[in-house]
View (tube, rainbow, N blue to C red):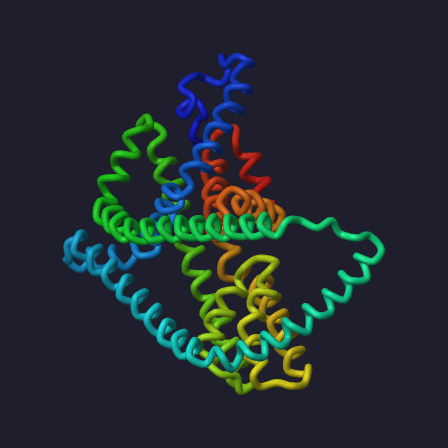
Length: 359
């Protein structure tokens, strides 16, 4: 039995007028506009949902052994916050030590930048001889630079404020979702007719399994890549191998651009120690290999079986959600699309969409 679209639309498909197609297009547009302008709120809720599904098995285990569910939820949220604070503190101390040694790296980076600038200036000089550049008033240039700098700082300050607000709300949302899970599920099932509630329950359980598998699989892949990067940087005698290895392991999970991003930390650290290009080539080659293994071997084995999305669907999802939500869209795009696939699989008439997403 599948969930009928009439439950969502409020009218039977057989009696639906042709105008329903245009109404659905308009409704889809309204939803997209809402997702765009309410991005911070929606992303905060989605992050809380992912964490709640990840922690729920442990809370249920505690509940089965006589511990009240609310207390178990509180313990898990506090434990999660403690782990995050501990990890951030450890990385912060290593980052402070790196900041103290930055002049050693900054001098060589400055020299390299000056060499590149000289090359570019030489090219610009030759080009200007062919097509002289029109000079602008100096005062105008200074005003434009000042305004661009001010707008850049204000934009970054606003983004930082959104992150702080989201990080403040997420623990509370996770606690309430875990503590009131049974009540929320019961209220959700009451929205559907009795004949459909069993199927709705199965769909919700499938969505929970997909989200839980996605979070756990990504954590395992990230830890494997971080450990491999740390060992590589330690073998190459780089400074701060743990800090650089963790950073490169996380960046390696970024689709398509992971190779470039993950190679930046070791290449910057290597400037102070390496004079020959051999080690640079080793780092780039190994980052490429780690990225290939992570996304083509580990990710399909640990995550792909859970999300059940085709490679084309994953690519389109990353492009769409990344365009809509930026960097967070790359993180949330796959679980959101996988959840949409599960919902389509359980709605009568939408099964072809689910099959297309699954490939």
